Length: 374
Image (cartoon, rainbow, N blue to C red; front, side):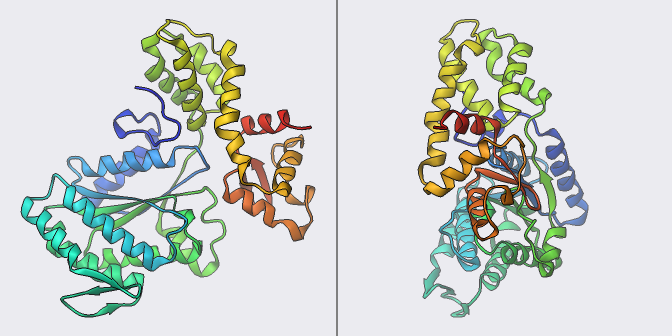
């Protein structure tokens, strides 16, 4: 087993996040009595492990005794509006049902036929049996998921389905989408259809919600992800380095100092260390740090800057020289140029810590910017 910094962790190799897992499992247990599964929002900054936790949750809900169908879908920036989202979720539901080991051959065949009966005309869903246009994403999901519940989920003895939506912040109109999903999945619960949603997004996803969409904020069980604790970092080191005879506590302290527990950087540096061990029983991490940091610059930080404008790079360099870890835009630009901060936040290079305050996404990125100063 090797760390893979650019991929979510496989559920059977998952480490840490026990409090979040317990909260999720407790909600699933309570749903046995209520017949309604709550919806979740997994919130955190770049590289913190949101996608990995979603996959872990999906594996849990599919296991005994929960018997829930996990439908996993990654949100891309080019997806567009809610109608396109609805169509994509239905396609993914069909694919998941057709490949599930819990469905019979008869149901899998019926699922494929069900999909083939759906065609798209001028961007609207049309069912060949009913000949009715469904002019909105909400109507499309309401009609199709009710039909899927009756035809497939109940006959296959699923207790419900959870849609796992990774990187929901990639969709524009954040407040509108959050409110539409809330209204949609709340109505399913009222109608006796046990569908719910669990999405991941940046930590500030709800901060810009307007007052009319406040119900969306209250609807989700929110799980905020922080970096790994020192204990979780030790668990990570023991999982990957014990076979090579490393001293777990000493290496843990060194890795925690460098990464502050950020899973991406833990995975990247650990992979580099394991590659340099080459079967030897001991690697002096500090001796290898200069060349590992060079690899980090080449593979990660240089690509962070690759598509930025000259002004954005100039702003990041100025921020890196600031003594304060958190700062205000007014320290660097006038109000008319605040959009630079918004764009850099969207790219994950800045993190909004609270209203009007930002920080660089990791101290190692600050160190890189400082090294590249003229």
